[in-house]
Amino acid sequence: MSDAALDIAERGLRSALAAGAREAEATCTIARRFSVRARDTEIDKLEQSTGRGLSLRVFVGEPGKLRRATLSTTDLSGDGIEIIAKRVVDAAHHVGQDPFAGLPEARGSLDAGDLEIDARDVESRPNDEKIADALTLESEARAFDARIDNSNGSYVSDAQVTLGFANSSGSRASYRSTSASMMANPVGRDGEAKRTAYYSTAARSWSGCERPVKVARRASSRILAMFGARPIASQKLPVIFERDVASAVLGDIFAAVSAANVAIDNSYLADKVGEKVGSNLVTIVDDGRLARGMGTSPFDGEGVPTRRTVVFQNGVLKTHLFDTYYARKLGAQTTGNAAGGGIGPNNFYLEAGELSLEDLIGQTKRGLLVLSIIGFATECATGTYSRGVSGVLIENGELCQAVDGVTIASNFLTGILPGIDALASDLRFDSAIAAPSFRVAEMTVSGE
Image 1 (tube, rainbow, N blue to C red):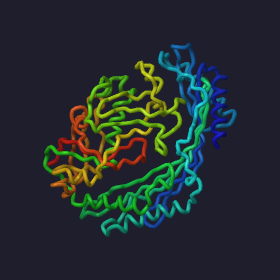
Image 2: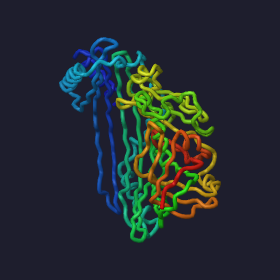
Image 3: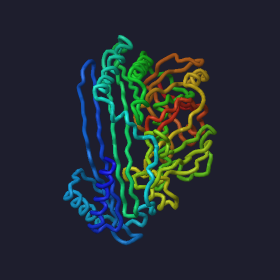
């Protein structure tokens, strides 16, 4: 399958050049996917598919004045590829000239390397076992407590993906990757209120995932933690972001270091490279070579080898993250973060500490443990952060009262980044953006 993806990419590249492209790149993806959803004792959704797609990015015109266009197709017949090649070249002629457009510098043969992202247990695992896992997620979640009497569904899925890449600068390569995941999403009855929570696990292999019983029980325990939740009075408190919501906060930081936002002055970190903007605990890395990482790949979306980039070092912003286009525009070098026509994370993570989450809670005299975040309200240009949240109030180092209906607010430059004063050790690389649980010394909590 690996050679097939590369062969298709090379056919696409030849067709684009024959159609009149000055420069071109072709990416072929062949994916086999399986997913199943269980509700109570039944399977109510099961999907299995093999999909193939080809994306062509072409440049026409003179160097320094190139015009570009991108089109994709699932028709991989000879005629289908020639038709899409002619269409994308024609489309490029209608696009304005751009002095920064063009392929990356020639890379030659790309070394796929062994990044441990192709697990054989994904291919070999029988579907019956995956279906059984989905039913186990349901039964274990409901058996956890009599008040958990419903579910939004339990999900199990995996994928095997082969990517072939070729461009007119001479780069060509292919690699294979796998992924596996499961999630429980039970519903509990808290008097007249219904409460829901989820817990998920994901890895490059089935052996890397947490077991279904643990996933189900973690999801159900999250619901019970929220029983009796109510708003609290407005005040300023230390806030602990539990691991999953901590990753969401890190996603906001990724947006601020993306050169696509920096280039249009839509980032509070646009002019902060070299400055200390975070506490000494803030070391953030983007690592596309991390073994078994969910964001790991040998090269990025435009064929540039991935690498390990330190973005923050002990609170000092070291660099933004670039693809080729924005690197040229801002006078920098690409960091191998091209993805989907823009800039994306590889494995973008906050380095972990040595404390457990229980240690963080125990060391907090009074504070708020945030378990879920609602809505999107970060102003990337200013760093203003405001979210609706639910969680548990901490008194004298112990969890004491479930809380919902409150908003937390601060600013990344003046409150969150410099205010991170404790890190947990629970970092898991189950997505391309990952963080351990961490505490911010003080945030505004708006409630009653």
